[in-house]
Image (cartoon, rainbow, N blue to C red; front, top):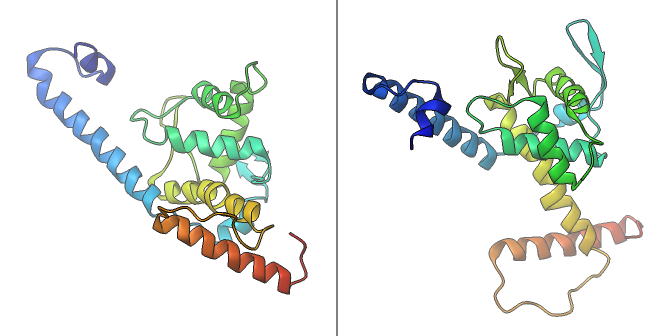
Length: 201
């Protein structure tokens, strides 16, 4: 408990207690807002079309965002996990989280590479730089987009594409949750669609 006022940078004197409570309330509100945004993930066709195109930060031209690259997906996943940090995060913290996501033991992905990825995301208005600091935060309007980009591929496309090679499953589980039934229905529909389109799964 003694470390909380230090981390909040509000002081430890008793007369600072209202400031501590206010700061804790702000942190909780930010967390709940981000949680709500993640629960209502959405990405538009326009956003998907614009992601791969180059953008500009100040006078610096940066590349687009390629979702087909494992590094890009790891960066988005890491940023989503850092979105609730009350004081934002640094390029070094992003690099540490990406390395753990990709299970990279060495320094292949360092703070310099993270800083470049941050620039690309800032160019798409998916990240913002905190004033007078080297820390970054995820704007609230960007949380649903990042969540959708992560969820669509990892929780929708990959399971569906992995299962459409077989028209039926060998053994149906006894306790089938509603979401499992949705996956099975989509898998069967995708199998039929790809067969009608003459696409070999």
